[in-house]
Length: 329
Image (cartoon, rainbow, N blue to C red; front, side, top):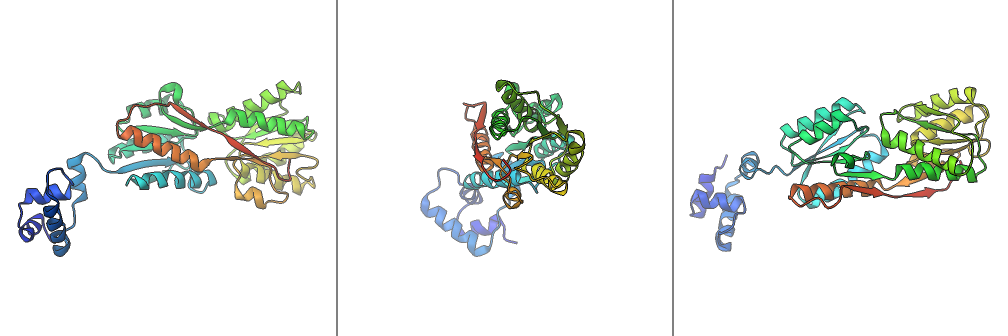
């Protein structure tokens, strides 16, 4: 294997000059750089990236922690942030927590050991332990999906309270009066609490009755299906359901169909996320479209600013949404 000495000998310069050229340091003539790079190519010298990173204290690595890789929201978000990081010559290390709160903290600590320059965390909860882990991180952390701004953690969030409010208005305008919410774990403040709070506010503002039910499940079609089967027994008078995600809503539609209830007629259904599954379901799912790719881009840009030492000018970015009208509402 070719060494730094081989390059220096062929180029007719010192090893220190070769090192300065490879590390793109100031003060080397253009003609010398060309000569050295030609010698590097001829002898087949491979730069020791680890040693180079140790010297510069930069690894060009960023860590991205997601709850699961199979989700539409995750895929679009990672696509968005990857575009920005690619432009900045940063490499992404991706970790999936499988929706484990403990693993979110573990991966923050692991990425610090890997000397990443920054971390983007798609969080499913926020509590004292997570806040402590983020504050102890040597690498800056950006939260996506949960609001950490109260704890001085830069965050990119969707307008979950307002989407719940808009869902309530849409269901009421469709003639619904017995409205319920199928959510997720109550530890997920954004997806479960804020969306259900917005729904309750819409009902209160319109002088309607209180929320008929608020049940908790998981981020899956199976959870939506199982919950809806039980809810049909417990609340046979329901006429409107807001589901925390599209996948939950698709499961709910399947349960309604098996009970010979047409979603969009006897029972109106709304989801969140504009997942392709909702588009192809029968009937097609009315939903809200979130800018998941823009969330990834915003998080990447915020993190790059922190990595470069720029002062934080915004503690929280709130992204809006679009109503998607289809057959179920």
